[in-house]
Amino acid sequence: MDIKNNEDKAWVTLSQIINLGDYENVKIEVGYSQTIKDGENPIEKIKAMEDELEDFLVRKVEEIKGVDAKENKPKRKRRKRE
Image 1 (cartoon, helix red, strand yellow):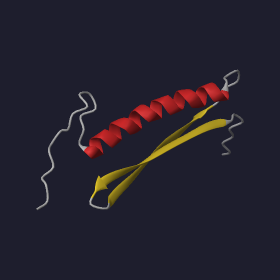
Image 2: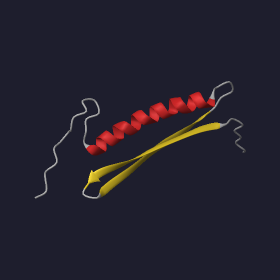
Image 3: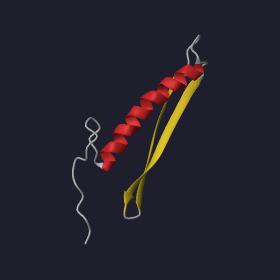
Image 4: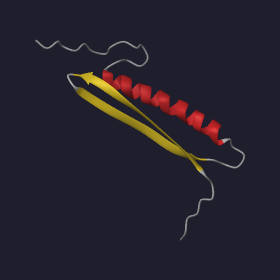
């Protein structure tokens, strides 16, 4: 069985490096693709995909940093090293 796809795809990937302090960094990458259907503007599709992924990436960065995405306040305080 052959699967054929004659439609083009739009791909979007976003990444961000987070500095956690104490020489620790985390890199987060998110991405996905969608089929461009006949009559759709590929640039508009990419822009919409970027907006969706950006919101997702921001929430994930805030989770890792310990910031509440809704209130933009720290979830917990870090103890200082002595």
